[in-house]
Length: 76
Image 1 (tube, rainbow, N blue to C red):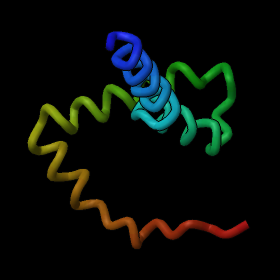
Image 2: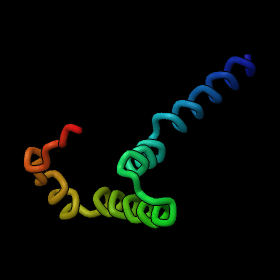
Image 3: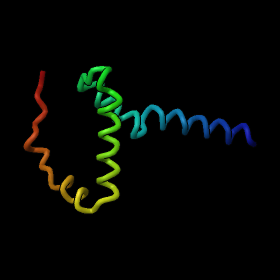
Image 4: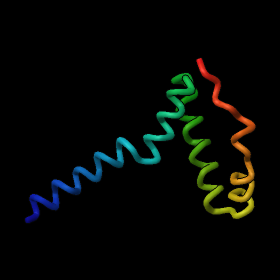
């Protein structure tokens, strides 16, 4: 029975690595073509901002007030 539990634990870990928050932020930075020399600093700054939004109601309110319609996605 532990073999099955181990299998599902490994699957959960793989999904978290592929689709989790850390992976998502990295993908955004890669898509944004952040240069390697700035990648870690930018990643850390984004994570710190995200944590501030979670822990601070005012920061969370400001985040939700951002109107994404003001930032259309440019088509290439």
